[in-house]
Length: 295
Ligand SMILES: C[S@@+](CC[C@H](N)C(=O)[O-])C[C@H]1O[C@@H](n2cnc3c(N)ncnc32)[C@H](O)[C@@H]1O
Image 1 (tube, helix red, strand yellow):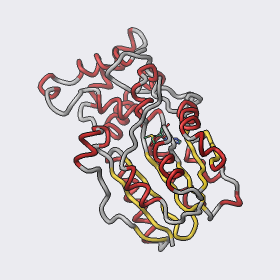
Image 2 (spheres, rainbow, N blue to C red; image 1 turned 90 degrees about the horizontal axis):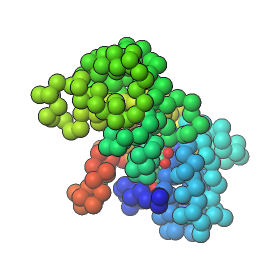
Image 3 (cartoon, rainbow, N blue to C red; image 1 turned 90 degrees about the vertical axis):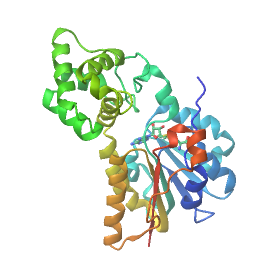
Image 4 (spheres, protein in one colour; image 1 turned 30 degrees about the vertical axis):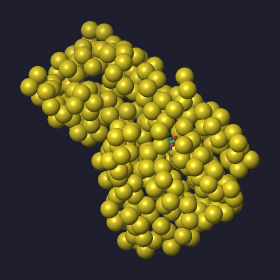
């Protein structure tokens, strides 16, 4: 399978991310390497430290960015630990840190990874295949209360309790092994009248499970915290998020940093893709970019 991911807000991201044309930059989520390709090709004197927790993404990005390999350091790890993974001599010297959150198109489209409700696959949803926690374990082993809480908090699913009820009853008969089985349960749990609005009935449950499996919000909080130890004076932290739970965290953390006099918020309002970009790449439609510049 070719690894093809269309980068979101790519021109805008580069413009805000790069202030020092000879700096060392971090791409916390290199994915298919699209944003980094632009960085390295437009700025011949910058260096890059590229993170991703998915080895498939790292391999794909290595291939795509092969021409620039002498300026790249690769780190396959969760960005939540980025300060521990980076040589202490670079702490306080990183010119800009970029986060493009969530899953990439290839992760989503490779149905065997279990991220999508559009195809039948094992319930997995791990971005990092060495993570012992899978969607299968959560769905089959966690209590009804925990599942309800997760669907409500991270899926903003109003039918959370009913879906959790259906899951727990079904798994008493046999384990729920596939995304297809789960989709059927969700459809059965949500009343027909409510299913007619709000998109695919499984969308919110799948979002919640994905966030839970990958501890996406915990990682975001910790990654932003870790970025503070690395960033240089005048360095920028740029974050593209794809749902309101992530955006709320970024907004809150940047506000707190501003109150603590660590720098200023560059984007008073988040930047969003143009109508043209959304038409060309519908997956960009929920993107929001926020930027903070340190003193
Ligand atoms: C939206 S894609 C990035 C796409 C990339 N900017 C491009 O232009 O091709 C997000 C990537 O971030 C990775 N990722 C998500 N959360 C992560 C985390 N906490 N630590 C490391 N990588 C993460 C995913 O594995 C995925 O490859």
